[in-house]
Amino acid sequence: MLAGAMLGGMRIHHACAIVWLAVVPASVEAQTKALHFAAVVDGTGRVIPNGVVIVDGDKITRVLTARDALPAGAQLTDLTRYTAIPGMIDVHTHMTYYWDPTSGTDPWRQPQRPPEQTVQLAKANALKTLESGVTTVRDLGASNYTDIALRDSINKAGWIGPRMFVAGSGLQRARPPFRPNTDTTRTARGRVYNISQIPDAVKQQVDAGADYIKMYGSTGSGADVTGNETFTFEEMKAAVDAAHQYGKRIAIHSYGPDGGRDAVRAGANTLEHAIDLDDATLADMVKRGAFYVPTIDHNRYYAEYAKDFHYTPEQVAALDSFRLRNFETARRAFKAGVKLGMGSDAVFHMFGQNTRELGWFVKLGMTPAQALATATTNGAAILGAEQSLGAIAPGYFADIVAVEGNPLTDIDVVLHNVKWVMKGGVVVVTPKQ
Ligand SMILES: [Zn+2]
Image 1 (cartoon, protein in one colour):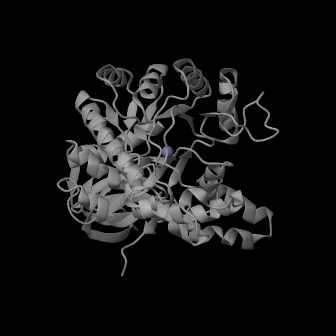
Image 2 (image 1 turned 90 degrees about the vertical axis):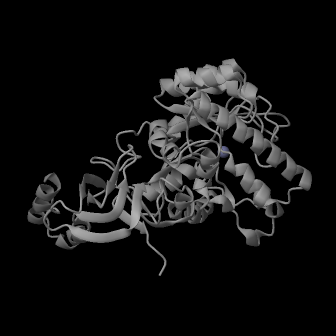
Image 3 (image 1 turned 180 degrees about the vertical axis):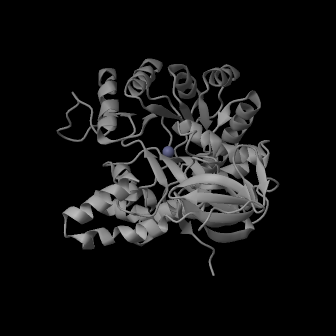
């Protein structure tokens, strides 16, 4: 209504009608859509056979059945070969980590490239992520704020990609040797030289436009599965308090149990990766409502692609044994009632495999519906977006994935049979002809 009135006003007062003609296709796009599925798995536990999802603009307005009358003028799309599930949420990605195999190096040793180029190259990761049925990511760490640039290009410049919640530079302890002329009296690029700089390091990310704060609370990355704690409880607490003071949530990375325990005690909203968590820590997570994002599958990925990374057989063995302990910890956590999130920790050529984590979740004892919930309702809760993401229901973003088969009896349907994806009312993936 308001937009129309303003549009009319512009037409009257200005002769530049040609500029406003560009608005017309947008209003055609705004036509009500009716998406007819074999069934709608709505993400709240309901299954609606013969469900018809009504989409206006970027939102879902109603969920009907084929027996109900369609809204007048709605454009009907026949998706009755498929079952609809909510667009999934991957709560741990590194979308800007792009590998160019023609660089002649392994992914970790690529030549430096300008940040602008990194953002452009990351488009490919964004597309592969959508193709896996993931329409929202929490991106946990990037350099030079390329994550913020990618998020904003998707939101404001029409780039095709998942909606992104980003962390900017993850906070990490700076350790000598430092680069020449490094000013250790102040934090920069997430590097923290002493505890007093932690609130500043958090504020720098918030000021740059981060949605979430990330802290690396232990060693461990790639083939390094050491997990030695790098920030103390007091330092983690300083980061948590600063994040919460600025209205942001915080994810703390720890491969090992000590960092995991301290991260939870310090009040981290989510704990990433950690293995061998003790029962008291699991109980503490339940009590506090902290989420565990085990990222089991990323070490499967590193081991499987060891050749590309030039990892040795010993490194592969270490990745495999870490993965087993990670799986066992996730199994115990689930049994103890800890809420889990689906995080792939996708980097490089892992994009497109974002949802493989759900296979591990089913293997450790979840039903397919419980596994799917980690990627829908739990993901939304991690982001504080319970009212807009993770369900197919009125008022939610029209983020919808069509899968072939029954996702409630076979999780492989979600992993391998994504056929069609809508994000924010726009169809972004269609079946290959
Ligand atoms: Zn990560």
